[in-house]
Amino acid sequence: MPETLADDTGKSAMPVRVTSLASGSSGNATLIQTDRTQLLIDAGIGPRMLSASLRQYGTTVDALDAVALTHEHSDHVRGLAPVRRAGVALVSTAGTASALDLGEAGRTTLRGMDSVVIGDLTMTALDVSHDAREPVAYAFEHAEARVLLLTDLGRFDDSYLGWIAAADLIILESNHDDHLLRGGPYPPHLKRRVASDLGHLSNVVAADAIARAIGGGSRIPTVWLGHLSDTNNRPSLAVQATVTALARVGRVAPVVALNRGKASPGWSSDPELRPAVQVPLLP
Image 1: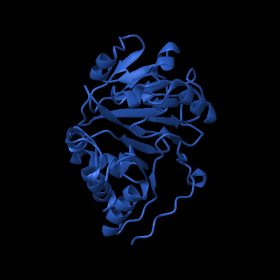
Image 2 (image 1 turned 90 degrees about the horizontal axis):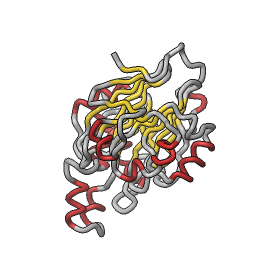
Image 3 (image 1 turned 135 degrees about the horizontal axis):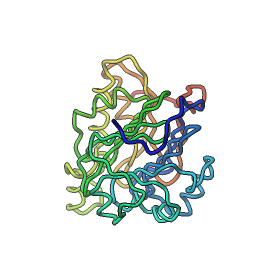
């Protein structure tokens, strides 16, 4: 049974709302809200920007029920200081907690495939391959929606396919275009790191994964492509790769490349509250 951080008193009346506050090497933070739960995944933007962003979406650091950390890299924990001062509950792996010297107070430790209940959300940790101490991705289940956040991984494991297929909102890393990375300005050692099994997913790998996961089904999820490299990628390239891969398996879905340094239009479990997404035309 998953551990419970807050009692679940019934089905939420408000749709699930998900907002990417930032997504990229300069900072990552994702906010999931219901009428009973305020959950932040990673706090990788500066404290001032984090506070301003939370206020923009009707909450504050003090009002957060928990902050779940994927790993210890600075672009995921840069704004953690005010979260710790406020005494917000932290969820992470033991490896992440050790790397950040988080201590035991107010912290829940997860391993891959462990689940924890936070308000009316059930969150499950998924192991990923990345150059951090014990990194994870997270899947979220609510009475109204399922959300998957899968970024910062250098190797795609087929065990993720079922989680992608079940999600109403898929947030998947599409970090780099292979050609731009190879011909770009990064030094050789950094190019090798990005392209390695401990680095980041390319557009092609991400697109293939999404197509394989939802190609045989009838559901139409929303796809958010995250953690795009500013140097080695372009939003249009990432989106086009996924749209093209979906077309090859006869599927069409809303596909969005997330903004790097600012919030992106949010997603709601209520289709009427979702922003319109124009599917790019195939060449």
